[in-house]
Image (cartoon, rainbow, N blue to C red; front, side):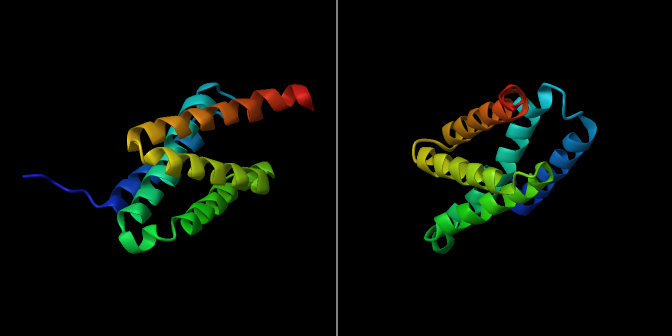
Length: 132
């Protein structure tokens, strides 16, 4: 007998884990921008939300509207950094990459966006210090 866990429960667990990680790990720790934030945020924003949308044939027709919505939410979550627009655009790029690579494999798409997100975080946290 296969037990199916509703996606909203998985989403709630992921969001709770993200909140715990954000509040417990110092943001200047190397683990936060390189590992925890990309993995948990991509599991929430790309995997959980977009897979719910894409699994419904009616909602999948307007997948780009949901990618834009997720990009706005992604930007809003990062608004404490005064980078709402930049992070919103990055959320759209990550959504585009996820949708584009999802045709090959969901796992591959998730790994690609996590790596891209980690590189972006590394640039934002460490690269911008030297440019400004």
